[in-house]
Image (cartoon, rainbow over all chains, first blue to last red; front, side):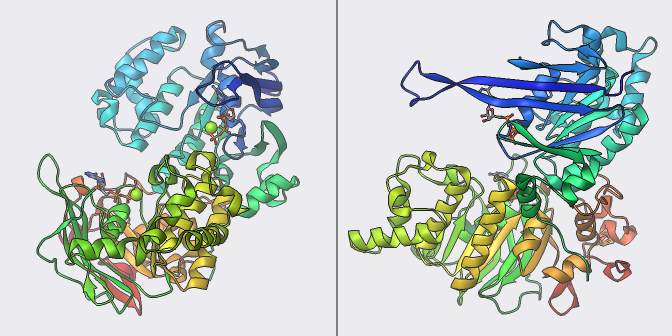
Length: 268
Length: 340
Ligand SMILES: Nc1ncnc2c1ncn2[C@@H]1O[C@H](COP(=O)(O)OP(=O)(O)OP(=O)(O)O)[C@@H](O)[C@H]1O
Ligand SMILES: Nc1ncnc2c1ncn2[C@@H]1O[C@H](COP(=O)(O)OP(=O)(O)OP(=O)(O)O)[C@@H](O)[C@H]1O
Ligand code: SF4
Ligand SMILES: [Mg+2]
Ligand SMILES: [Mg+2]
């Protein structure tokens, strides 16, 4: 095993963007969403990726899981270079799983929880349990804090927090090495958000997971990240241990972010 | 959207003291497929003049319905109960004309999503000036006043922005335009429903500062609705905590945050993700927020409450005072240990 689990080097992603008004066809200009980002996530490490809307966080995540094709740069997992999804070896594709922001739209509301997990097993047969699938499913649900009766329910009947637990169960089902969480708790109520963050922290230890944890909320990232990387305008402006980046930010943009973050003052 | 019909008044708790607006036992019922759903259930609080009151609670707790009842914009078929005492009259019982007159000129509202609230086919200036024109101001007077309002809302170089449409503004600028529009009628009470939820933190901080400045300089009363305790704590003098359509606790912000008198408030405070402390995950509440459709009997919070016992499962706690201006709807508030 290498020192770093995920290694992103000089990543560049651009999109064609139309310039003129919507009714004029033709004119598009290249828009660079991610511009030369390098980032490491070590084994068992959680790295938080923060920055304002449009800074390129999701684009980095999509490049890591292979949903967008970079113009330049490399994404390496455990020493193996990742190509785009589809042409990526199944074992590597399995190693990197993603949990999305909107738990409702990332699960098919008409599928039962059992079917959702089973689908993951069918996509990656090597991760499917050899013996009793129902028992394995129940262990998985238990692992993410869901009652086993949830297995028969449809995703559409579940609460936001339950849906997010199912998304996590689906990701864990294929035994990944790296979990990419893109605003995975941002849409949840604060009491449920705390539950899911706690679950992720516990799972990380139990399953020796690495995580790339993306959020626009510095407070949320602080609860879970060992290191924090800060993006602005497609560029990584600062990274370091969480305590340093939030406690003594060096880049002026990070200082502005930390300065604007609201805190509760409950000291008497 | 229509104006709701008033039904029989609900019992009013003794909580309301003299305010600019007294919300007394407010009830909002919405039509549901299996009968009416009581989404606001006997909510009482008051908004004193020149004071910011924060209305906090998780999704579905009835914050927006409470604000919409005050401004008089409830969904089709909604019925209301209780009273909304505004300068000597009950807004739930005045006629439509008076209601429309109050809206905009005495009570104004800003929304989470300004793009949905603004008309995409009219310039910002036209929309901000609308109420002024209706008041019969001359063209150049309207223009001068609009420039002044946009300037107060922090829009740079307002004269150059007069011909802009909403889509030509960024999210933060649109929210500023909403604020200018709300101030145009010179209201005494401003309702702000999640005004910064969709914005980036740096923009959020600027908008909150702007609202604070305007509130102070104009002596405005403000109801700030948010699911984020950090936002409310930042600007509100008083807070009202809602759970499943009811008030759980209310009081001065500092008191409620430092010495919560309701286990739900305590849990909310404890689960706020901070950048100085790493404690939000220590004791997460189990379960999910109760909804009006599925409101548990007795104390609606009992399935998640660490202090719950038999009485909580059957008897709904009344809102009672634990200190001057500090109210709780918990049978056992006295047992809550002081924060160490
Ligand atoms: N498929 C696409 N086509 C064109 N432009 C895109 C596409 N995806 C992203 N972008 C642009 O790339 C930039 C970065 O977007 P990205 O979604 O990565 O930002 P983000 O940091 O995740 O923001 P947010 O906090 O709002 O989620 C934005 O300007 C966005 O508009
Ligand atoms: N148009 C509607 N018709 C029927 N029920 C509604 C309607 N709008 C809201 N509700 C229900 O009324 C209850 C209170 O909703 P409200 O919008 O006031 O909550 P909220 O506290 O503002 O929540 P959020 O934080 O999600 O904005 C919810 O249970 C919701 O499902
Ligand atoms: S009344 Fe009972 S269940 Fe409700 S908050 Fe108080 S102790 Fe908890
Ligand atoms: Mg994103
Ligand atoms: Mg709302």
